Image 1 (cartoon, rainbow, N blue to C red):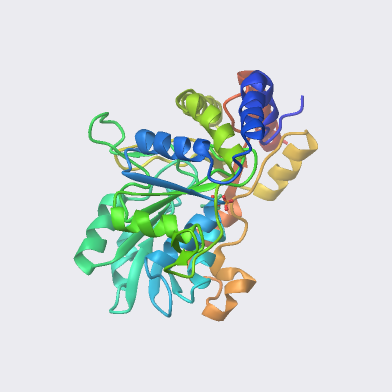
Image 2 (tube, rainbow, N blue to C red):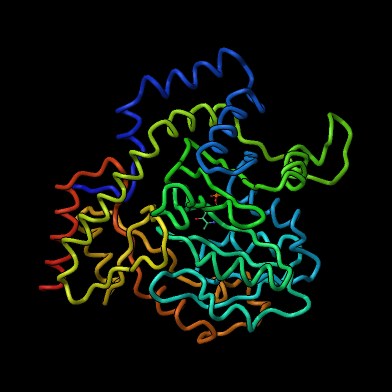
Length: 374
Ligand SMILES: *Cc1c(COP(=O)(O)O)cnc(C)c1O
């Protein structure tokens, strides 16, 4: 049996007609840039997340770069974030010459260790950039509390966090990821929980002034056509992507439920293996299993073994950002953020997507078991 780490093909085959029709409509109308499907998607995301404003852009990375620019994460100001994440969470700061100030992660959740933030705050600190990784949100109560006490802006990297909810077990008072900070960012990269058929991203906010600015920044800083108030960007979500994402959004609740069911299949089957640790969910929140990770001994050998058996697996992330060549100018060395470094050596992501079958999960888990019996 071959088990893909990720595949968009099954979903496409299931809903081929809807996806084809969505594209065909746009082709027939010819409204390729900021067509009505784009604003339809934005209104639908506002409704889904409860955010007052949703503004789509060309990618999650652009959403982070534009948001950092607007929040003043630039010109030598310090922004506190975690080194255990995808590059874009930190490169967005460096693009505007802000200084990333890393704080190590909580070893159970892989999110920023909020107990270590306060000691890094000084008069030059402008903001906090928490990342909601893999399946759960950072401790937003603590982060928002520190931000309000110290007058800091908060940019939530919710690129992986579509559907995650803070205080998520209460259906009336929960807050969707991205709506707690000043600005929140989603990515529609194909593998993401709400993934498109190409690049795409979105910025959400409850602040109308910030929303106005985001709208200008995605069209070169123009307040109206050919009237430029700022030096902005050319960063828009293609109408074709918006039309495809509107189809995906119709089924998102079911996709999220399926992901969480698959995560339970893994947990049941792997819990008895002594060499494997399964990450815990902390705090009152509704998780979404965008990625299913395990912590393992002999991780690289296990990964090679699975690949030999045609089982996809992936390592998020093999090197923490403070040890990446591009950030060497920050002067960090091995040992500076020991939890992040240890997790980078042990973590392994297993195949998860709504269409994966229980037989396939069985196959993956049996292969893991047979590896440790060798
Ligand atoms: C995917 C991702 C991004 C970047 O999104 P793109 O749409 O690929 O540009 C940023 N941050 C995190 C944590 C991500 O996982």
